[in-house]
Amino acid sequence: MTQKNNKSTLLKEPLNQKHVEKPAGSQIGHKRIPVYTDERNLKTWYANSFRTTATAEEILLDFGMNHVQLLPQKDGEVRMVFHSDNRIVMNYYSAKRLAMTLSNIIRRHEQEFGELELNAKKRRSGSNSNCKQP
Image 1: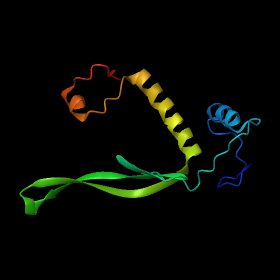
Image 2 (image 1 turned 180 degrees about the vertical axis):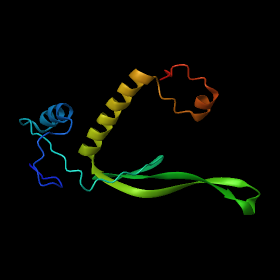
Image 3 (image 1 turned 30 degrees about the vertical axis):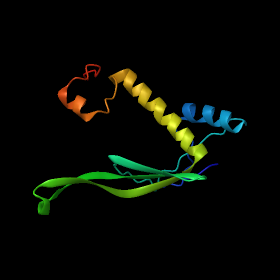
Image 4 (image 1 turned 135 degrees about the vertical axis):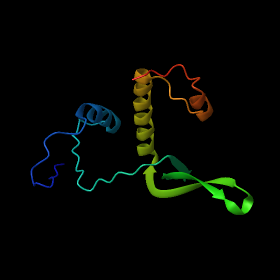
């Protein structure tokens, strides 16, 4: 599969060829197929939260932002509101490949920089002594 970029030249280099071809070939049971990327319409969003929903056929991933809202009518009480802006729908095969890829990326990051502490209280107190300083 060959695609053209904005300057109408052929894309010659597969993106992360080493990382894409080997797993793809072993999953489909065929020879390796180079993967080319067309990023002309790529958009970037930031999410600090997500929500998952599953059906028998697919997985829905909603990405967005958690916002703390002050409730003035309740004497300063606060609530967390999840603003979902983007939804990705995947089949289970793609979701499993995504889970495996994210797991590998996080494992490499923690090997280099130390464990990612998910408990915010422990991160704030500085009790996570495994973190390496840059």
